[in-house]
Image (tube, rainbow, N blue to C red; front, side, top):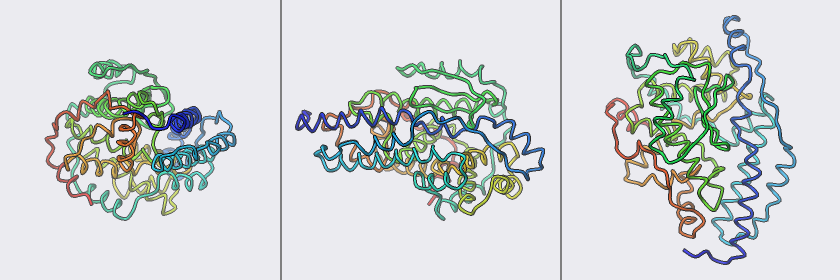
Length: 386
């Protein structure tokens, strides 16, 4: 479809390009992962879980004030379409909030309050859902597929083999300074694997569908649009992204009760922040009250308390429920794979495509082609979440 008003169109493209250049500098996950995780883990265990870890973080390599100023200097009044203009207002406020998160990493409650603004915190309903999940029995972790045996260097062949079904290339690096077993860095199209982690075959299946099948697919689709908002991210896109990623685990028959319980523990841990718990108290809640093994309890507590209180982790479960319900109503998932987009902005996404500012998704998540889930307990849980 021909774009309307060439002057207004060029203004929108210029504003989008400027914002893209600015926000490429603020990949939050690049700054919020501590650089001394394993050292502090040993000290914490030696203290009998009483002395909170003292984490160190990467240095911030950009001028925070200049970024704020340049974001708010964008002439969005030149955007004629009211809905698109509102979208870009939301984008500017969202990324200003992320800059505030980054500039307060390690600064106790300041970081936590900035995260509340960006990601929110679990509702009572969310906590009830988490506790509902925790009533179910785990799978038998002694099954061969669940046994950890692959070092990060050994896993590259699994990721590369899985990725043959996709028409794109990406980088793989290894790090001892991430809290997750693996993660995608969107701004440099890179998969990061945790060198301190041993991977099971099941976990590799999960990560391939989660990290490559969704996070890398949406990264690569996002780069194809005239508007780079699809690449750097719509406001509050994290919930939709993580929901899609865990849903790919479900559709590929790799979502287990154990995995759902991991997501539930994250909700409980984030909720503990709202209750004022420090690191050691959240850990003891998970380890003693919920009987979670100490390594898992440490890493979940780390994910939630890094930076001073990182609330994002509760969104995996809420996002999964939203995507599960969306799919089961017969909706097409393709627009949600078009980049780092948000379910709540679906109408705006379709409008941008109709006006020629965005294109249809080139890459499609393989797991979504057919529902292979055979775990009736997982289905029962997802159907009955509130």
